[in-house]
Length: 273
Image: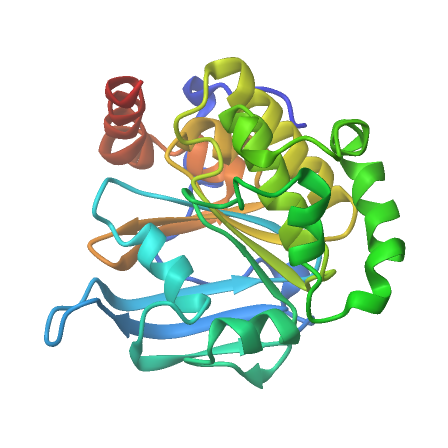
């Protein structure tokens, strides 16, 4: 986990750009996941995304922040085939996956953890994990060992019914189930939503640990300051478009981002508690 960021140390040299240029260190690598000029929405003729872009390079933790209604969760659902993309494209390691169904995306290597209803409450922890690998049942024992190493508490309580767990524990089960297929990239939708501050910290630490284990992650998060502290790069969405992009520290230190977004987002988080 990175050190806490002091927004008072902002300087023009470290400010992010409104463009979506990748850092120089990533220019020679192919993104594991890339979205270009996405236009998407739930109702005919009503677009939530209006030309949104995103690149996630191997081993990166990408944070997506922005005000309520900016299209953050819609972007994740569009990437995972749950919202129809009307214009633009999504590629996974260079292969076009635009508008593929969710089961095909899981097979291709995209994991997704929704914000709510993300476990099978009547099943045990281990049965939930088994559901995560229904496409490759022969690898269950092998993947289970990896998952219990990342989530030792789940191994200790594997027979407990998921519906009896706390919100933070259910979030762990949901993440673990998505990781059973050994995805190339993991999409997390508001993983800290509804959790106490202590459980939020645990979730962010766990997310960074999963990332350090080699899993590329794209995370939508309402707790903007905490998200920017742990992410490698971030995108600020506003009205379905990229308003700013840069490293987590650049965004957290930028006076304009602080003025326009971080203060408002902090109030949104406080009011949601």
